[in-house]
Image (tube, rainbow, N blue to C red; front, top):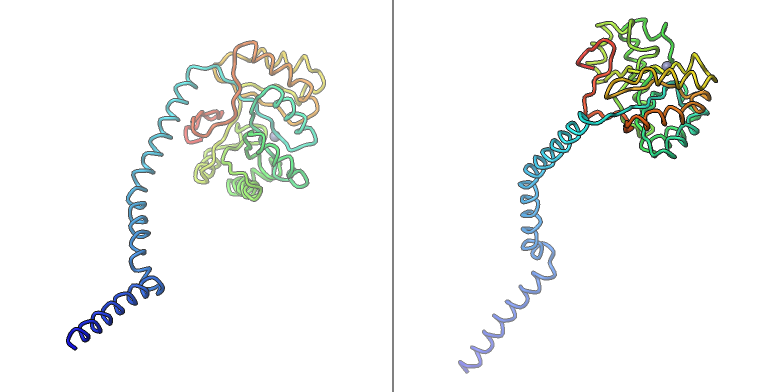
Length: 274
Ligand SMILES: [Zn+2]
């Protein structure tokens, strides 16, 4: 009799055990209790690893920039820049650049972008740098006050941002001198924008279809290790561009686009903030 009671008791105990086991398997609250500790531990571990990992990434980026700067200091580099686009000629300029495996910098006028969004997309897809050249390109409107100047540039910056382009490099219509005085430059600095003028004026706007004059004009000004060439998105630039590219290739220059990491200052005021 006692044996039977023992057996029954054992049976009950084992039933309780096995059912509690089932409960652990089937009841999500029970079951998850043991499982939950893993994701939490993982999250904690990930968080602990996050800061050193980010520091490591920053350190790697810093080293890459230092290497870039060291290389840059030794190389002969030319920056081809094209103002006043997008125009119907911009795709032709892009074709020539692509044929020569060259990346360049384009300072776009905000009001010309409407209807030419696909050109902006192509500039981006081709890997060229896009810069700001105001909304109106109208000196009278831009230079009403430092606020009106910076507002146009901010407006263009937002417009480009809506097209997926992030940029803070700008160029003043007709160059930064003489109109971009201290008060204007302060506004640009506060808006975290940079200003790029040029070292070589192709005078393409002046000589138009006189391709040889444009090429001679550029050729006579090549003397620095790093040159920034001013051109425009016009038909005459399409004609003279192959000759200009050849000039720099023959003189051992490599072609680059604006690189914000290099802090290459090119403004007529020599304002180090820009
Ligand atoms: Zn312009």
